Structure formats: C-alpha cells, structure tokens
Length: 107
Image (cartoon, rainbow, N blue to C red):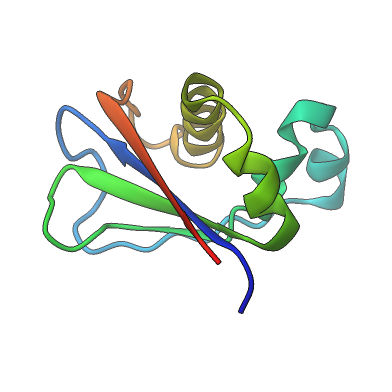
C-alpha cells in the first residue's frame, strides 16, 4: 500500500454538510499554476469526517506526496490545507480558521 498520511484539522464549529466526503478535481491549468511549495495540494486524495468527532475533517495523502508533507512543519501544512479548502469550498460557505492540527503517517 505504501505511505499514508492523514491531516486532521479541528474547527471551532462544523461548517460542512453532515457526513460529506470531498474529492478535489483540479483543471490542468490550475494545477500547473500552483507554486512549487504548493504542488502537493493537487495530490490530496480526499477529505472525510473522522469518526468520533463532529468538528474535524481529515485530508488524505499517499506515496511520495505523503513523504513530502510529513517533512513540512505543522503551521505550513495547516495554512496550505486551509487554502485548499477555501479554494474549493469557500465559494458557498465561510471556512473558519482551524483550532488545531493532528497529523498521522503510517507505512
């Protein structure tokens, strides 16, 4: 299976529809316009709500991208993840600042 990396962002309140899963589909143009330090955002495989908590979401990555993101500081991962959420979901809702981040990586 390879490396799997989870980014769990906690929020002050739920702002997304209940039991939703998100998959982001980038246009070739938008993906090619990402800055070098943001290229990994194109590889976020999906977002789910983790069981056992109502105010958190999990972003999923795998493979070489997971290894790269594992090496980044929490504040950078949180900021870039928030940019991703606002880019794709912020048109119809206000995405608040996360109140915390937990990351988990397993091979």
